[in-house]
Image (cartoon, rainbow, N blue to C red; front, side, top):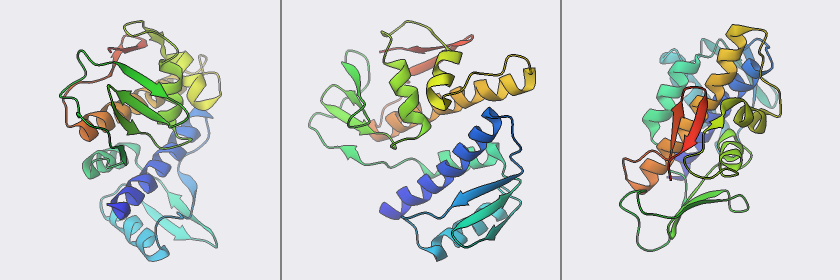
Length: 207
């Protein structure tokens, strides 16, 4: 379980590097990935070799305290991330809800957890998911929130309106983060309900 979580975080770190490169309009063909404190050097190399075989990255090179990653594929990495099924530690509280309908849903930024009734699901600290929820829970359920507001909370940057291609990448950063939050909640609670939906150019919290 712990190793699965560390591998998932490792892939998520690569996805966040790509998102950051896109957000700042810099090249993502070569990225610098710091060593993981939760995986042994051998496990990190094995995981990168596995990602290379799956064409999620073209190649990698081990440096003193980081890896150079060459031509990572955001789409393949995201599919691999989803395949591994997030298994973040849950806040073990009684009466696991059968769904989101009828539940009180809130967000605790100190615990970095989405609370559904008396059950909570932890999010990774200082990652896109935390910043996404921090932005969305400032607004009541059912209120559409412009994607640019969420993007600024996630990245601390203004979206690019002058470059259409870059703007689509900025928007995708928000969309991908929303999907990851939805998937984590559904898998941790073993439910089918989405907490967030994409509606035109906005994000909406349903509960």
